[in-house]
Image 1 (tube, rainbow, N blue to C red):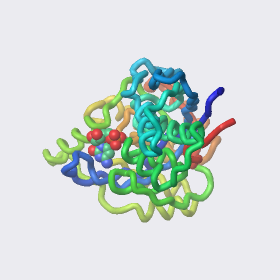
Image 2: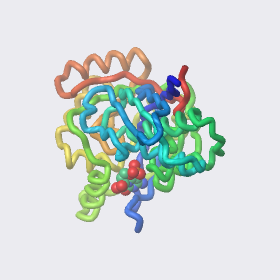
Image 3: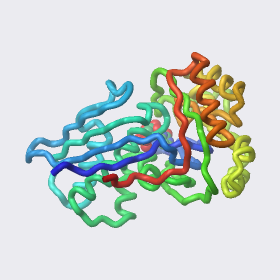
Length: 304
Ligand code: C5P
């Protein structure tokens, strides 16, 4: 058995509005996700009985990715087995990463979503979409969106999803930055800055952003992009301010930290503009690497 292959996309948050910290430690969110064309490819195959989960990981800067049951992909296999009444699963999960590790693009969540889709196919198991969504949400706030893809509004922890109409194709330049930022630390820093009066939630709502998405207008979308975690990411990693400034200096329509960072994303007018921006940013010497990506793309899906 050669196994099952699944492709899964990175997410960006076009809007990330962070509410109060809840008693369960999570924050209420209102966010608009878009899945963009940076992909991890996962292959899952059955292993000999009793071998448990084994993981191999390829890609840039993957040394810190756990190769055991601490990896969210392994936990996804276990959670799906439990949900469908299968015994403790024996699987090998091969992860080929293009989504930056701990970069604010939900790479770990993406791998978990891909593993759910792969194991469902590998075990030829029937599980209702709502049940799969529940298993995904239990694994992490961003896992349901990685399953669904496209453009969607997320509320709750970010796990309650409604599709959003986005006309046409949106072009992004993704600036990869050195080091990692821990999502819990960035949320904690957001709380700290707010409690000291040094930061506050972005005003307004996402109605103009939704209208720009419907109309397919990158110029209208640019002023609507918002990330309440950005002040916290900049506080923990001040050097990101220079990256954001460099992107807008070379003509990006807008730039912002992706999720909890440290990856930054820049909106381009179209494909050619994005390719030009990517070249200029790469030459700035401020970033570890750049990628051109477009969205929306589909959620985790089987590939031949
Ligand atoms: O859900 P996930 O495991 O991806 O979240 C990682 C961490 O990010 C949480 O432990 C929490 O500290 C923070 N978080 C949050 N509020 C959310 C989502 C994540 O505080 N809505």
